[in-house]
Image (cartoon, rainbow over all chains, first blue to last red; front, side, top):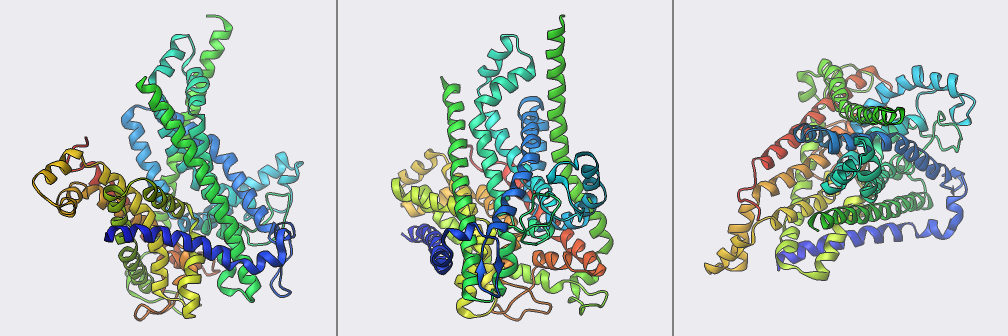
Length: 297
Length: 283
């Protein structure tokens, strides 16, 4: 039963990982308790660690990325599943899959040299001139910051939303579309009022999946967010994210408490992605089965 | 046609066009990325890039030979560590297990698959770097191998399950033992799919950077043996891109082009292998 040993080692490794995160952060958890998430002083010299700026940065950048990626991704998925002929749809899906395979450090590279200058010289001044009365579009335009990180993240998660949403839309039974059309709805009405609501769960699943990716993304964010632990209402402001601070400080942690605080951040990230991935899988499976069930009936 | 109907038809045409625009924007991103990398990387890539060590800080020139070899070594260890566990684990799931055990293994693999790469890095750092008090190629390979396990496992299992039941039964009826059936009938029947799964897992970890920062670390010189820190292409791109030297930026583009080229080629080859069909029709 050698194969059993290999299979068991997968479980073992996963358990070890959880254990390591839990045990490794015990000091920080006991010392700071819930204040870890509420305070924003991150000071390795005085051994004072509050993670609010990192959590804030992670949530804001992920939020911005979803605001951009969800409409674009779902729109593209509707086109691929409902409008495009099968061959075109498959060809485009192939490119989308390749896009999903581009490593994050490459997105970071393009972010640093293409997106950041574009933001600094064009987009941020333009936003400031038109919507500058909103607090989120104020402050100097550095190019780096929450907004830039959010845009780069959006580009990275769009392929996930498209792939999964397309699959789910394709699993919606044909009868649903035909029934809507035969009742006199236009093509768009049939899609938007019948097909999309039918696939709603699976589409939500694809969004959770994308959110989990965006929260845990490290390299691209580290390269464009500015790495400055502040909580600021302005999206132009440089910030910091959980993954970025781990990447920058883990190997240089000055004290045990510093190291453990970073591991606790890793634990937070782990729990967030664990919950989101679990929800996503449930929703996607439930929706596909619903489609298959009705198709057979 | 009354005004309302005209409006509905207009809306339909407009919104459907917009979905096309969304698809166009999303797909064109890939070509933007490729275009920029070929444009910037193509002009800065040279023979030296593949054969020379990085130049001392401040000097122009040099290459990334050590990072290319380093990436190769890391990926070799990752494959040797991750693929067997994924492959044999998948055989167990598809052929031997039932019920609860299989559920637990699958669950663990899916969990591992969803873990952000930076958290994998923390784990590998705590397990393979801290106890030995130094960064090493082995630790980097271990981190990447961990990420290969769930990808290999889940897709291999799926392809093994795709092998028709009739084939299994035929082999058994001829008197083959269970193990013999697996090694000489089922695995060969699914080999294209398994190969694809392994190649995709390989391509996925080839560009991983975050776990390497804590494990393989980096090195501006050749790394001797397996127990020293080593440079790797993704980590070099990161270091060079955020450094303030123009010449380093040039080299980061070149490295990006090489890395992305490699990953896209592996992806395309993997899909080509699969699309030629699995050796036996699915039941």
